[in-house]
Image (cartoon, rainbow, N blue to C red):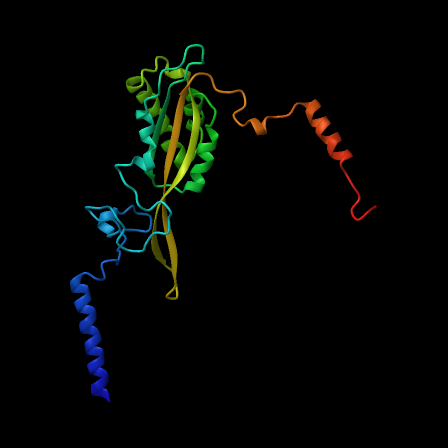
Amino acid sequence: MAASIARVVGLRTLAVSASRASGLLASKVYFTGAVGQPSLQSLGVLSANTGSTRCGLHTSSVLMWDKRKNAFGWMMHNKTVYPPTPFGEEQRPAFLCHMKSNIKYSPKKMWYVACLVRGLRIDDAINQLKFVHKKGSEAARETLEEARELAVKEHNVEFPSKLWVSESFVGKGMVIKGIRRHARRRFGKVEYKYCHYFVTLEEGDPPEHYYPFRRPLTPQEMLQEWMENQRRRTIVNSL
């Protein structure tokens, strides 16, 4: 009986060692630190040639990041050629799309920074971000400054101060999972989240109300809305 058990254990050990030698257990990942930023190729997550995932470490919907597509063609909007504006119609304002990819920051936290600068002039947006003590505000400010420089150099914008932020939103990036050791042989899951920041600068004056459906009401409109709500009151289960 003992000999048979030893034979089975020996066969299992031989199979595991053979699989390790053939590279079947290549999905094992060693992190450099709890808050480190390991490279994808060193972790065995992305292939060096194709960029496809080799192990099931991610649960994000934006896994297949392709540098040639530039985040699903966002930067390709700058190369769009529009037909000439017909005579008598309003001239199409110049715009510029820019982005910063793979920011080591949570997209949920970056959302607040992106909403802050919507509908503001480029100078006002940069000045506001200087007073926001968040990690994502620095990345957003750098993206706006780069977009302003590109608008002057590559898109023939004469006055950079005439630009305003027409679009500002965040995209979810890759999520690298790790573990953190606790006491009593317990482990906790750690997620290293990345995000992408997208911005569009448009030439001209910003609108008075960026959100038309959230336009602030005047005192007279607030009183009228309150009166209408009071008149629409009904008694539940009545005749």
